[in-house]
Length: 369
Image 1 (cartoon, rainbow, N blue to C red):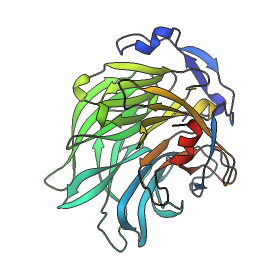
Image 2: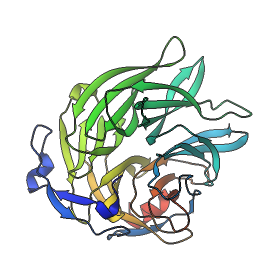
Image 3: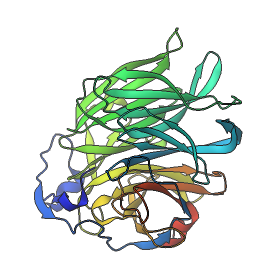
């Protein structure tokens, strides 16, 4: 994450940029941002609760969350919960939170940046929830993988499983995707590298990964999110805009620029991305970090349709500013009956950075979805 004080947004120059493909050059023009704490125009919502501050004090540390909900209660470190939120402290490791925001577990795993969660793999005949994180720890850069056994009891918790080594110098963004029965792990490098793997379980019970795509995004990039139903992979190139790639790795580097960096829509640094589905449609939410807003697109049609932006203002907890990462879960998520959005807060009112929980119904009402 780039400090808001030093943040510079960059504009592409022509209206035709909406139809650019990866092979076309993208022009960047310097634009001076508004500075730390600036919040631009957007529909106002409030967070309903927040996590404690991450343990690394006084630094840019909290980064990216992931949300997993269970149809039946599970046990995490002796506590019953309908699921959990994972959140990275990119200076020290991985937190596991309950849907009340309280810490269930901490794994001192090093320099984890982005985290995501997926189902669909079994280890030793037991279905597992798999967490993956981009790992910048010297000597182990790549993707670190963790498992959680939803049928486990007692001190059952998230456990280290293994790693996927890559040639990416500084792993940054990360997301999982499902393509039919396949689980795909997608890594985005700080310098714009794109690597896609099919993840499986080896005969030894350890993770196995086969690289199926490598491409170059262009410049610094991070947030990614997949939409299997439309075979789409969305990636934020921080100072250029929001791209849509094919999720099928055979599509290579072909892409379409959905939204260039633009004032009051998507302001650099464009970072986090997540999707959420409800009865009204399927949506993509982005982090417009430069002005602390969250643009939303409906993505279940022929092309993404921009629906507006929201911001998180003071309420039961303080407002959200300078967001790096965010994640959403659809449907019933613990006490959130129609979906939950979890958002990193860069400038917290008390203590250091943390994560805040927003009820999807409040966002939907604010935007008239």
